Length: 332
Image 1: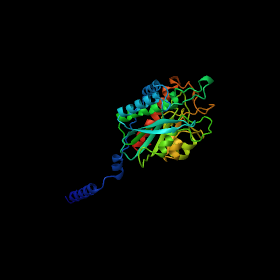
Image 2: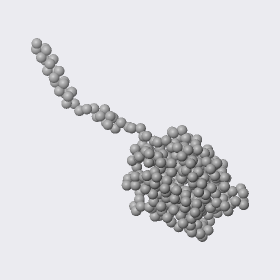
Image 3: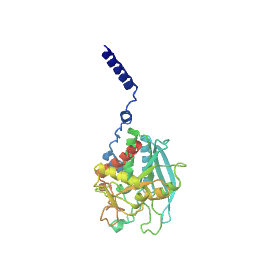
Image 4: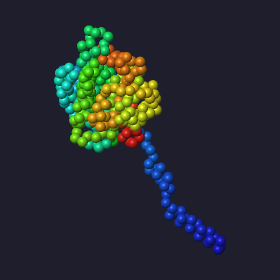
């Protein structure tokens, strides 16, 4: 009987000790902070392609022309239809030949009150001459600009649609630069390119505007592109550059996103980095062996819709979409 009572006391003591014990910190934390997979919406290459076709349907997009204004009005309406708050940042572009052209940066804001913001950008104007065309008679005529201007713009308009359909916990500003492609081909006039991004970098659309980082897109639609790593992207936003390129390669796109230095180049991200003080990388096609360092139809009349490859649009669009959705959850 005494032996049975002792066993009973031992059992009660063990029960009390076990009952007072704190839950396992390891088990508790792992259950509470279980990592949820990031849901990245699927980017539609067909939709982006259609947006490029639409831009070309207006005609040339040389600043100040009626077709340029009509295309701008369509883009503004399109962004608004996707729920964006749109700002038209008008400015006068001082072209290297002495002319002044009315121009507009189009800024589509998603979650405009969020303090944490990122920028996705591209230029939307098309060049007013075709100085690289093999046909010398056509060199004074404006180019279609399907890839050079149209492709990045088409990708961003499609991303706007995704942002409406798949709300994100992040402020996203889609900025379409104007008057990017109207610079001096001889290089004699300094800072004659990227006039829209220069203007914005000095006079942002909002006082005390800040963004964590930015990605600029330029000539992202041609077949078999080579997206290397330029010096300014490396210097000003090296960490972001490594993250985006590694992510793209892990997504199976190492044939396009290569770990190769492509040196210096002039593009909108330079001014956003240096003047605007937003760390920005550039996704731009620079094929190996190209005489101009850019795609074969650069500043020629063959830069029409036939120059656009849907897989290139898909790859770039999916990578950039993944970047912002991963950033919104802290997974980039």
